[in-house]
Length: 100
Image (cartoon, rainbow, N blue to C red; front, side):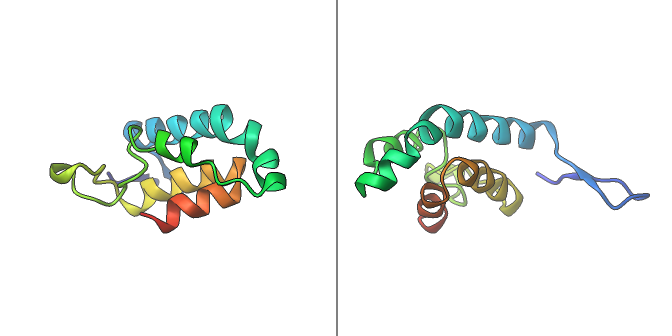
């Protein structure tokens, strides 16, 4: 899943699949992580229930081959996911990042 690079500017554009991954991660972060992040932090709560929700979205095996149940995504895809999650809660994103 390579991004397209503009030879004139050196800037890249995400392909359709990468945009979909980014939008999915942003929506999940906005709906499930951001509204709770401060409360989780204050209570020193680990949101295992919300972490479990990331599996069916393909966020639990980002680099794992798809023939064994992973998402088979690349590093850029992972960065898009981690960035979206970190925007909502850096600790949540760190957990997902570390366990991938």
